[in-house]
Image 1 (tube, rainbow, N blue to C red):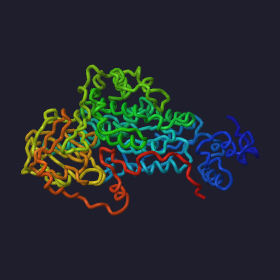
Image 2 (image 1 turned 120 degrees about the vertical axis):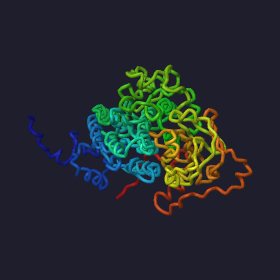
Image 3 (image 1 turned 90 degrees about the horizontal axis):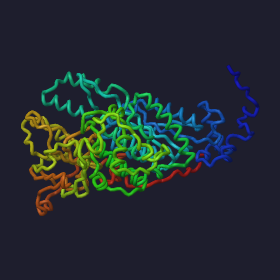
Image 4 (image 1 turned 45 degrees about the vertical axis):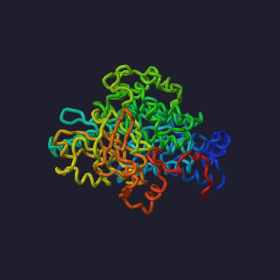
Length: 600
């Protein structure tokens, strides 16, 4: 065993081997942003270094090395992210290994399963909090740790606004659920099993047993819900290391990847690679097409629009339809298909999908990634190990154009979205009479009423559930089918709302109707008994009521009072509509990484 090094007077005084203090060394050797804190002289430098040393850091960590923040959305209130402390430890190993100084810090955590009224109310708050935290501290780069649905876009939005070197590490999906000899998918089977109970085909005791069988490991939803979708979108954008999105949360390779991300974060600082260099128009087009090939969540539309607004890339709602008309659905995953994320990873994950898109000429191969390679270099030789899960481009799971489409028409002049791959084919062209509810609670209170006036042609309309109306844009756009129809064997009807839908959901659900009812959109004029016509192939959604009659109608008033205080008030006063990404109007664009004024 080597004897402990003897403390020399120079080392005891906190000098480097060259005789200069760490602050002098940092100031002279680098122009790092963190040097404004740790290389400062006098009282401020003393404060910044001294208090950091109460954590056991020696003076050598202030020698000008890159300081890498680890933004962790860990929380026991966010089950999907409850393992991120372990992921952060792996990132730290990589940062130390590459000669950086890792400093972990908490950011707001948003958990779909517990938070009310909806995590979407808080996505922009999390993005704003993370942005301000990054800017206010002595950081040269940042690793973003996310998992549950809104934590990924919120942290990407924050990083884009600050534009310091950054990369993302998502926490990974849970292992496949197992119940009564078959596999369960998070979210998707929640909707299915609860409908089975309502229809009398499953007992409440069996549903209770399924609870522990579905969520049986750490990680986020293992269906192609919003969490898995946004993890893949982050990788397709180039903001995650290639091949990382689908690794299960409990797989040792997830932690090896996190350690590699820590090393790479240091390199990004040294190379001065910032999100603005990665998040180009080409990157967004890659992400939109990847989402279509995955059969991914409709929520990706809202999040990508908001992220593009932060980084200054021109992107509009129609791009999500125009760019995907030639993109087939290649992945057979719930909710559109059969398999789950564990199977997707073993089959080859996102690189295998991107390779197929590249073969079709539908990928910008020269787009950069935070891994230091282009998309083409990362995916050009990516293997596929299971063609049942990831189909070849010439034998797709679903034909081109059956991802998420954008509808226009008299009921949604600013657009609405419909996930074709999760809808019932016989309802994609449909005409029926509306049954209208001003609040989702008003519908759920009567959904099991045997006398509810519905039939298989009814169009269920739920309004006042948009960004301002709820407030917060909740995932109530796939309300349950009326029990009287379930008992008659009808499993799907057309549902229209200004709400969102969980990425794990399914059904013929028209979502994100804009403008929303609460701001006076046409949805506020619909009355029970009106004829509504959906034509997905023609990308139309129309309210078949004469214009003169609509002009004489008084819009239904918002169902909820306007918030009077706190975040909800700020949100409702400044939130933009769904077709603008539901970001706050004053957060569009970047604020940069300028070092703030002194605090003492």
